[in-house]
Length: 316
Image 1 (cartoon, one colour):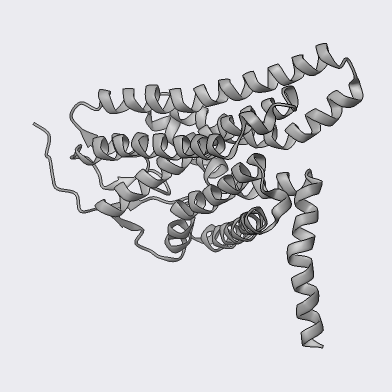
Image 2: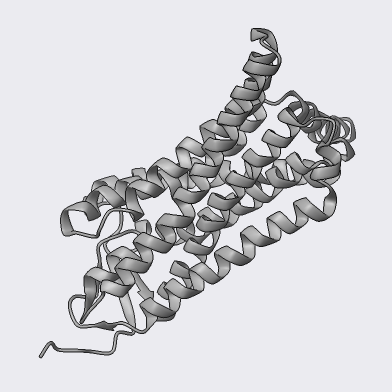
């Protein structure tokens, strides 16, 4: 009989055990987090304030920016605090809450990226019917489905994990609370938890990825067979290229982490991969979209450039 104890907190092992590297990691992750807040915050502001960007594409982009701010805020502030402290503890309730919001926001992003690909498919392949198909009711409903579906997916993992008995170590082999490292500490049968993680979360992420690829496949085929023009094809694909880069950066690491079964050796790889989708991808999203999108660049200059100019005039 294994020694089952009531766990009140977990100890996060963090990114590194090397003391000298911790200040360096703190500076790197602080810069990443601040860029994320400023970049995604700017996109969210222009998506709301700029009338020219009041379209389905920028509505979804605003949702994505909001998601990325929240998504990295679930993990990075705690990572930064732990890099400066000697005792990296997180309460049991805090751990389950972090797990819930991490999966809630992550699943929402996976579904939202698929919706954004569908939006581009309708815009490019059915331009005359675009405003009819993607009317305000439809795109708000699609976004609501993404958020609500993901909430209940995350709730399932939170409840299932919270009901586990923990009889091994309190030391969590990760820099934030996630299902797989928590399953390593659990005693008893965790096959159902592992199955739900692989099948349900795997189905959401890979299903959304498949729908995204399908949308791009139809876009390319439609342009090749209908237009047969390299110039039009290049122009259309350039509008999708930024979205496709985000898709690859997000689905690749997520698929790598959640479809494979948990093991002690895979946890080190999972920790490295988690840095990509929890910290790096949310920062790259605004950079990719703004650098490749003229409308967003013009809106940023109009919204923030004019304010900066007025501020300079008042200063002088």
